[in-house]
Amino acid sequence: MKTRKPLVAGNWKMNGDTVFNEHLLGELRASLGREPLAAIEIAVCPPFPYLAQAGGLLAGSAIERGAQNVSDRPNGAFTGEVSATMLVDLGCRWVIVGHSERRQSMGETDDDVCAKLTMAAAHGLGIIACIGETLEERESGRTEAVLARQVDALVGAASQAQRGGDVAAPMPAERFVLAYEPVWAIGTGRSASPEIAQQAHAFIRSRLAALAGEGRATRILYGGSVKPENAGSLFAMPDIDGGLIGGAALIADDFLAICRAAAAHSGVSVER
Ligand code: PGA
Image (tube, rainbow, N blue to C red):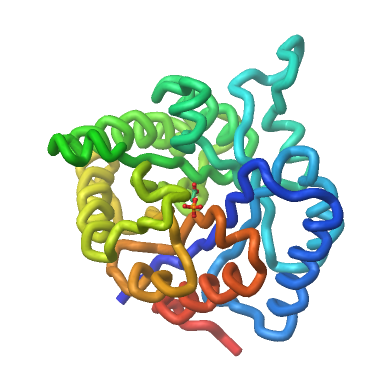
């Protein structure tokens, strides 16, 4: 029986505009108003310029907001960057760090991702930290080595934040979430099978347990071509605690169906 509350987060990437967002969030809000899914946590991560608009459209709803990136610098002369303080000021609860698109096309390293994590944690933001192997790494048998390297780096930074290391307040364990996103499954329509995903999640959880002594409380999301058709079988796996959803998060009915699938496999009992 799962005891972790699933999280379903929509990663909109560089998509949306004011009209589109109003429509999409209006539909999500209306549907979740009629049918609250209290057994799960739901977040949307629009591009920076629309975080404030999304805040207005979601005011009073249970849908949380996250950003897709954050600067590792506090403030000042960093043209084009967005600080953790600004995200908090806009009411964001989450930030995605280490997405493979940023690791690959913007050259972000584990060190860069950890610096962002530390800055975000210092400001009380919840972290969705992405990890995952490329196709070439999987085919050459290096999946576990790559995941171990990424998990070790992130968990090192997160445990320092959780102990209150060099940050203002300790980060609660439920605010550090890992997202396993095999790079070959992102935006390709080729999701990992539930068994392959579960195998990676179990490995990640054992790594967490070895490093932090307790892997059970940490949520591990699956991301990569999650659709209404495969969400149920993925979320039924014992170590998959929700999803980071790209393309399907832009279609209200699909995102809602994925949220329902997560709620159906939550194992968390809800007071009614
Ligand atoms: P996808 O993207 O669902 O479109 O594959 C997932 C992600 O990149 O977070």
